Length: 130
Image (cartoon, rainbow, N blue to C red; front, side, top):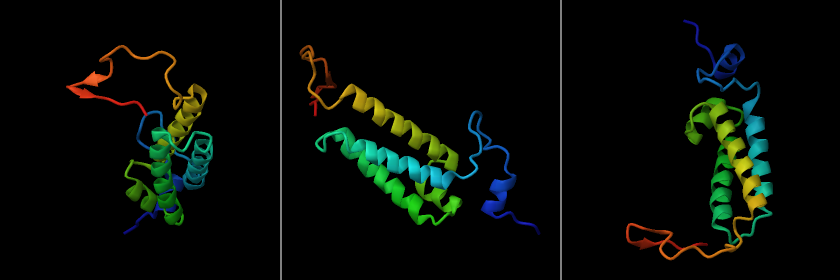
């Protein structure tokens, strides 16, 4: 019986089976680079920002998983639990782009205009801005 190992499967795999998502020739190093870039960009957002705290914690967790996979794509896919490694790379790239937008928007700064009373009140709960 002939079994394909993951590296061999990646060499002959022509598609991810997901429309618009191409097979990446070397996804793990690219994923590591993307996570590191995201963390670097986050350093320009104040540490008190809830957005920074959440994204930083999640990205650091994912970075550790990718580093500990030791080049085993299937291990990274299993622990990241985001589907194909290419999907994880797509998610990481989107998050990095969002960090860039959040920096541009300065989302951590106070609002220029105060919201109307009750604007952010849902289901009888009052939301607080951070």
